[in-house]
Length: 363
Image 1: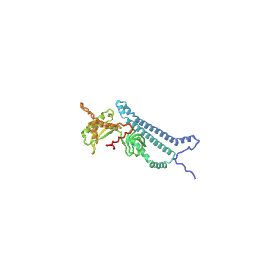
Image 2: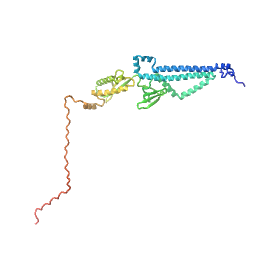
Image 3: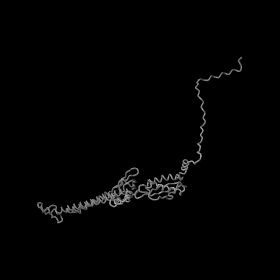
Image 4: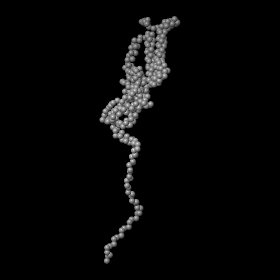
């Protein structure tokens, strides 16, 4: 029984005449040379792609090119310094996406080169591709949550939904973002707990420090208070906070004092809303509460349920009128006390009384 002769498409793994240099040369310019060219060209292409990705992401991360030219102008430099958070977030997003793109390029170019080499070796790729497809489907079903995390993280970075330093509400946790990766986001809440939230589990994300924010303060005043006067006082309070050198830089826009937000048997709720820069709305809100407390007290406007307490407080702290006599202190008389009789230290018993003499002598 004779062995089957190789088909014309089968590669020659070894030269026909191992002792002939010409046979070796003909063999080398065939399959080995093609394999070597595939490997070299793939390596050069991968190096070029990775270098291009690195340079582009570094330009974006460092703010060079257009941003650097803008920084040479005084106005442009001021604009860049005015928003350092956005610059840091842009750098982080660019470096993360650059890492993902470089890894993707390595996998794609390496996979193509691997299949081309197998084809040059005469290996039938159809069963191999089918096997790889089956393994990919199995891994897809088994690690679908992991794939979902990576895809969600990629789109999150592309859309710039949040970054390090933002205060976010991701459902299971509310706090400050400390780290962002393609698979997980780390959030530190107000109690100091560090939450590791997989990106694929986030149904919705609320970013409280992106773009701009509102500092909202609600005050419940007495039911019978003059609402026009209350609105005037709160407007002056908001203007004073905006003019303050500490909190004024965080105020962005005119304050708004709305009408009645809530009406109950105890009082009326009024709302003050001020637009602020990102991450400073809580500072502005605290300043509004402190200034509103002082202004309402000076205007004699009590909060809900505090009318009697405010009246008593104003009565205690009211300054006397000029020329008015100071109220005399009430006289206090000490209660009369009776001194106790001195104790006698004489321990002798008193003498018995003399017997009464008889009215007449015995005869």
